[in-house]
Length: 225
Image (cartoon, rainbow, N blue to C red; front, side):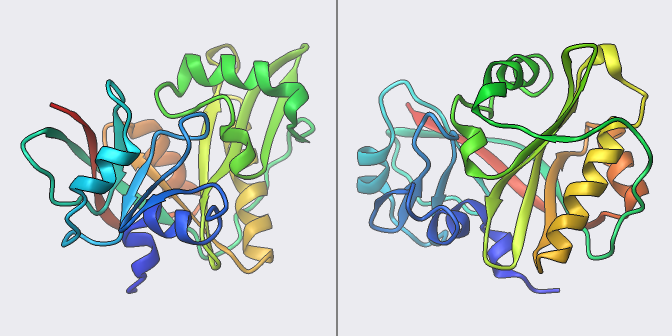
């Protein structure tokens, strides 16, 4: 399956679903820092020197996925291991479990505390505004969450699938994953996600519920030299 949108997901999302948020210069665009530390470029042939000088603050590191620009010696690109990009095209059986609620600004501090514990680096104070977020509370505590981050017309990234260690092995992530993936399929959007090959537990869960490997996609960070 050839899906150019998914081969350059940061750029495509910033040009479609999140275009109103995009900070743009020539062939490059980024999310505001309070939303996500992501930068996208139109193609690998783009000379983005002037654009990234404009878009990236001193001391700031941004992440790129799938496509990187040509950069001068004043910039450092650090390559990480490729991520597995996975998609789901069929409904997932929903297991029984506790109530799932739509998360709002009233839950922001709980979400930030949980993501800081088990999903650090990429979740920012306004990341929840990029899409819908859902969670499960148990004993007055936020036990598990899931959300939507990157998005295009026909595709929706599923993100921040995480469970507090005190509530692991209860099937909460599986329940949330099924509910949100199925909802997007019903809306005509194919859910996709990214996971490190080193995160064996998460990758196995996604495979078990019906996500399949689409491709490996390269992942970098960019900062000033």
